[in-house]
Picture: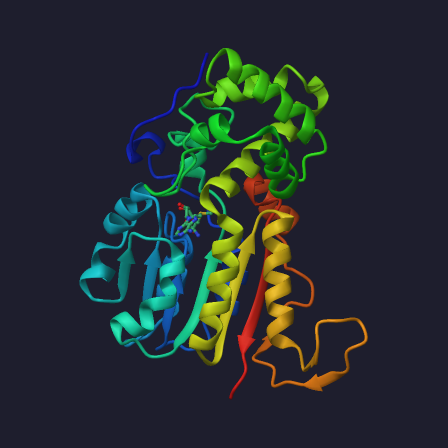
Length: 324
Ligand SMILES: C[S@@+](CC[C@H](N)C(=O)[O-])C[C@H]1O[C@@H](n2cnc3c(N)ncnc32)[C@H](O)[C@@H]1O
């Protein structure tokens, strides 16, 4: 039977999202029980609940999400903590965490957690068209702003589509799929997840279809939400706002996100930099701002993956703000 997109939080009952790498993330994040923390992607609130458990009076969490269902779910789940001023929910992109200090006269932050990607609720309900398994309009925006995926598919040139599928999906058949999309849209617009799925299925061998669809849907989601740019900008602006010993913990689900986290952490942890932008430049010492806590990313155990297969591609990286 064709799976249809649901309409509200009640569709998945209590199983909003199973938090990934929960113990590992929270143990690395919370070092100051009276500090101010940001959960930039609160989702179902699994990580926030564990952070709140470790906090003492004075400790506080700002929880961001662009998805109104996630915010509504957390308003209900954390009614007591919100009333007590221990949790402040903000329905906005986590890039707004950069202005918390200034806008709310908050002190330096004790930690930032980003658990990127899509919650199980969002995939299962499928209302925004993030899953090729559920028939829905191709929107893919986390919030109300920007261009929905169906408009992007209608307006991008073939070259631009190839770039999106290659850059954000690392899809080897990008050119073939972009061509198929352009041909198909000349006959009828691609409006739904199943329109896109069928277009891709027509040109990709059956054995490769599932992986290809995952990559194409991922690429569109990143392009629609400018996810990589927001991630990099936010990491860069938060680092100066962390207190000494404050932590950043990021859980990513594909190599592009992980690469950005690794690159930014390395840049801020370096102890010297080239004096000029050329291969013959000499090096000068710089004061490092971060200490990298995860030389290699932490990944879920086989037991966690068996319990929660959606955790399988997760990679966690963490860094600590140095004094000075
Ligand atoms: C994997 S879920 C987080 C799950 C959460 N850690 C938990 O324990 O339930 C990712 C969440 O990030 C949100 N999100 C994605 N991009 C965002 C952005 N730029 N700003 C704020 N929230 C975002 C999604 O709406 C989704 O709810």
